Length: 377
Image 1: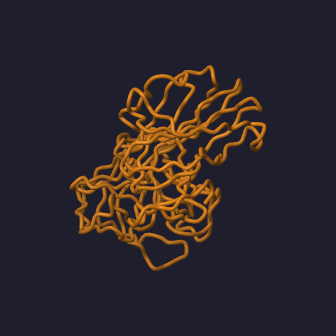
Image 2 (image 1 turned 120 degrees about the horizontal axis):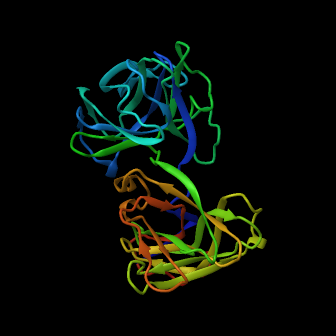
Image 3 (image 1 turned 135 degrees about the vertical axis):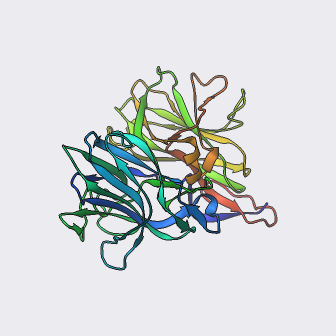
């Protein structure tokens, strides 16, 4: 094994996690919403896939779906060359008509099974997933949840993209809550293959867990595997401190699913020496380098040690299968324990992903053994 440095290093799993907040509102007949981008099949599978009896999975925000004859077509369209902003071509190749009062539930992950038309889809195809309200009665309305891209609260350009058809026209400028956001959708092909719109990472909900040294569990973390042999020299978490007493340790283990996990590194994080309280952000700390073996379980944790609360960000998935779209894939699992003793409790089914990980400093290039090096090389 020859380990070569990769510059500043690589956060793994990457901390560019999805950010909730983008919502399209469809509440009038002829109003539409679209998520547009390139199709990504899990594992980058090649070859055409049939999409005719598969499903579109998406998240509804606040919804009133109660009055007949309210109806919405949900399906796949092509993308026109007219723009900006990108927009669908207006013709469904495959869809389902969902009629009130069934098929949509407020604040829920929705599975809409196709039943009209057929599409042959390939990894990399440019597609539009479209919600088209064809009739509306009463006060019926649907919020369709998307994402704010990482680092950007109010994106007004870029790609992939969302767009809304309001007042008889697709939007041509960024509009918070309607146009110029990122998709949050999964397509399940007829053969069960899952796809999403690259490079988005689908999720159901997000939040923050707050705990302190007297909370059970007081240590919470993420099991993961690296896809290659590598060396790490740092730990990170997305979270924060509730007050100046919200101290914690970042810790790293091998054998996390056994009754006797092996601690490979730890570093104390004091609130007094970090950023301001009551705000969540990336927290990074270096550790003595540790060599990792590919396809092997490891665990990074946050252990509360102070009398004040700490916070750790979480992403919750609608299905354990959706981990396939995350860096680390189906190896990702939530792990917790109390008082730094005994085995970690591993979540099953695994649908909670703590936003934390390691800094990879060196990767294996398959050559001769590496030279001796120190922290920060």
